[in-house]
Length: 184
Image 1: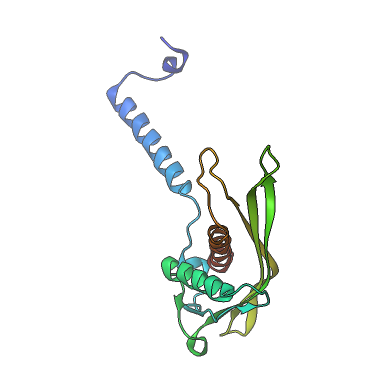
Image 2 (image 1 turned 120 degrees about the vertical axis):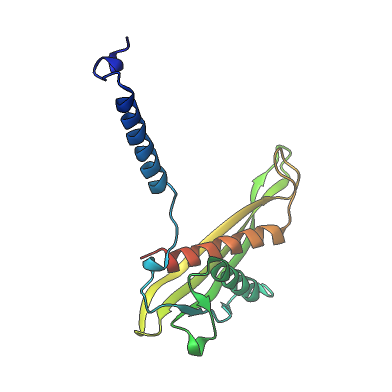
């Protein structure tokens, strides 16, 4: 007989009771471990809509403002906690300004040839409650990066600067959404 079995009665109803308790513990642990999910309860109840005007572009990168704006809009549409509308009818607004763009060498091969680059995009972002006319959050220097290899390396195919740029833009959109709907 094992040590854990010494203190347990051997009746089938006790075993059923223990199994029920164990199942309850597992269900509770599973429910608590589902990760972070945004719910409308995390937002003030009066915020139902958001406007996302085109970001300003203080860089020389052509169409970067459109790419970032579209990515942020797409994240909010997919998330569906705040409906994207025009600025005049919105409860909240997200305003952004792209302040920096850099594509720089990040890694070399053994033969001293460039093989890895890093795209860095910087923005300033403001999320404002237009109903109560107050700033909810702002970030004067939101910086996201993405590395990409220009040659095939084990486990990863060669990519272009546009691939790195899109990955950094996606990270910016994810961060803006996260801070807006989960940051309460």
